[in-house]
Length: 186
Image 1 (cartoon, helix red, strand yellow):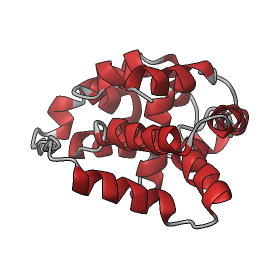
Image 2 (tube, one colour):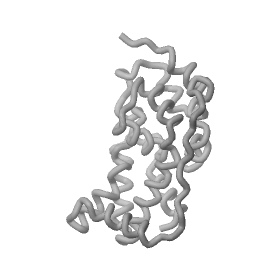
Image 3 (cartoon, helix red, strand yellow):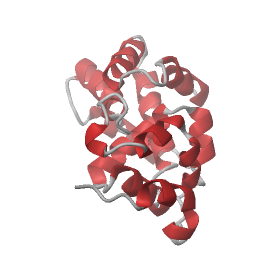
Image 4 (tube, helix red, strand yellow):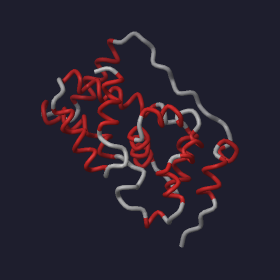
């Protein structure tokens, strides 16, 4: 599976659809793939999530979520991938552009306890759908990760490391800070 095939599955699952239903749709799509394509899907997912893993994106997630631990950040990264290729391409290097996303704008209008499960900026189902499908076929939870490590060991092409972003979040995220930074919740 190439990157276009990966994005076809992500975008075919329906942005704006409830995460559990999207996860089930993706699960059905992955069930028809070869094991090699399934590993490709996970590899592409990991690569796309790595594009939005920097400190500044972590600060954006912290603003939006009113705090963000490691697990929450991974779910947030998967949610960003779920927003689609165009959005991910746009926000990967400038997280403040998340302020333009309708989903983010709706969240800024209300207290997080009033957010529905469907609109919460997490997509845990996407994080693990290929892992679970691989496990179902191979009966070993570590197998997909072993397959990815073996692939990395065989690949002599160096992966681009994400550069550290040492910009001041208040300066680099002015719109998100204005939308979410001043919230004081009871």
